Amino acid sequence: MGSTCVRIAIDAMGGDHAPNEIVAGAVRASEELGVKVLLVGDPQQIASALPPKTNLERVEIVPAEEAIAMDEEPLNAVRRKRKASINVAMDLVKREQADAIFSAGHSGAAMASALLRLGRLPGVDRPAIGTVFPTIKAGKPVLILDVGANVDCRPKFLEQFAVIGSIYSQYVLGTGEPPKVGLLNIGEEDTKGNELALRTHQLLKHNPNINFIGNAEGRDVLSGEFDVIVCDGFVGNILLKFAEAIGGVILQILREELPQGLHGQIGTAILKPNLKRIKQRMDHAEHGGALLLGVSGVCLIGHGSSQAPSVFNAIRMAKEAVDNQVMQQLQSQYEILHSASD
Image (cartoon, one colour):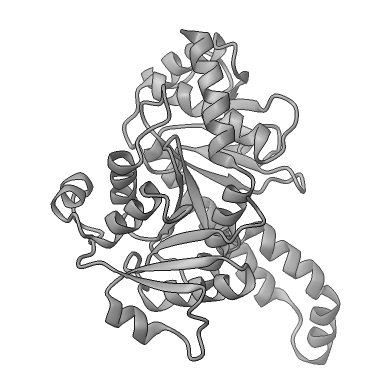
């Protein structure tokens, strides 16, 4: 599949900086990644945001009459606004006119639209947003899910997150061995946590399809000891945004503490490759988006504050997911495990 031109549907009206930053990142992706981007939204606004000399062979504008605002109730808005940009973009994937979708708009609306139009993988009750965090061990990321799709969860939802996360970690992130799964909790002991954590711990402990190694405290998240960590979307979203803020603070401190003047310029020049690698490991813009795992399609969800670099990297992730046949891997492996459990 990597030899064909991957088509990415873009919700051009979703996000705080839409459509300008969304369009800018998408056009850059079309030029540098060789993908075709389908920009869905208000044709006039999108056209005015296109850079001069845009290669229209790889950029297509798909009209959509409406957009879903961040303060709207997602499911009602998705059902009421059938011609909203997120719905039109999702329909392109459903009709196989696009291979993947990216939206920086309302994440709840994106999930609702994906569920209604693409459906779930067999055996999955609730899809989860999975995002990859860097750890103190270089080249050994940790997958956290859910980070926002489900603020209220049942124990069986978290158990499914663990199974889906294990498959994604092993077959897509390249963990190799059965990924080490942890449950985000307030202590390492089996008896710690609220009712959700206690009941989930028992399910994970007795599930033969995952390599559950116990509870993960907050300080363990970036330790590199876990490959997958599961939690409900309420806690996960707070964790995600806190981690991103810490990354931004550290990068800002590095900039401020570098020496000034000539010595500073020389030192910065020497350290530039190292600083670039630090930024790549810590800056959330380098990752771009998070996969909605559990739906029958490649769906990337970005931050509402996404700007052009984040959009570009999210599209890169979408292309890699298509090229690496992420959906086929998830579907085949999950079906095997689901049928075995039945």
